Length: 225
Image (cartoon, rainbow, N blue to C red; front, side, top):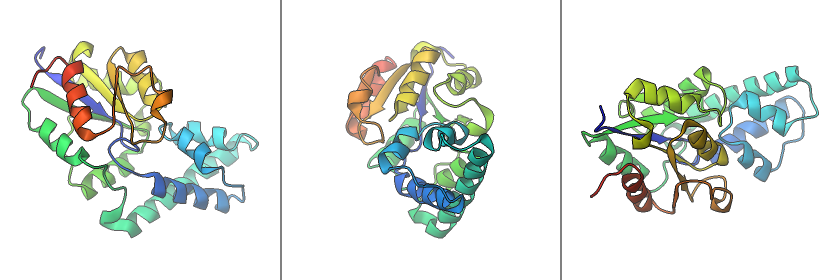
C-alpha cells in the first residue's frame, strides 16, 4: 500500500460550478420561510460548510427551529432544480473531468471525494457527468462533522490505507485547506472557486488551471512525470 497515493477532491467550486444552483436554492428557501436573502458574497463564503452549520451563519437572528426549516427547504429546492436542469446541472470546470479520468486510470492513484453535499446530491452529480465509480472513497455531509473538521479526510485515509504523506486535498475554500491541515495532509487551492486565492495562502500549493493542478498533485505526492 505504500506505493499508492490519494487525491481527495472537494466538489462545489472545485470539480463543479454549482453557484447558480446554490443561489437559486437559497433564494427559494429564504423566500419560503419569509426571510431576507443574504448577499451573494455572504452565500459564497459559507459554501463548503454543511447546511446545518451554514444556515445559522446566514440567518443568525432566527431560532434553531427556523434554521432546520431553511435546511429542509433548501434541500427540496436544490433537488427540484437538479431534476429540471438535467444534464446542464452543475457543469464541471474546464479540464476537471479529463483530469479525474486520467488520475483514475493510474494504477498508483486512488481518488476520493470530501464534500459538504449530501450523498444523494453527490451521487446525482456524479451520474450526470458519468463519474460514478471512479472514486474509491466517498465522504459526504451525511456522515461527518462539517468541514474544517478532519473526519472526512481521516476516514478516506483509513478506507484506502494511504499514508498521509502521499495524500493531497484539492479545494477552493478555507474550510478545505483548514481541514487538510487538521488531517496532516498537503493541499492545493484552486483559483476558479468561491473563496479568493489571497485568502488561501496557507495551502501547500495553488493552481489556476487544471494543468497547474495536475503538476501540483504530482509534486506534492512525490510523483515525477
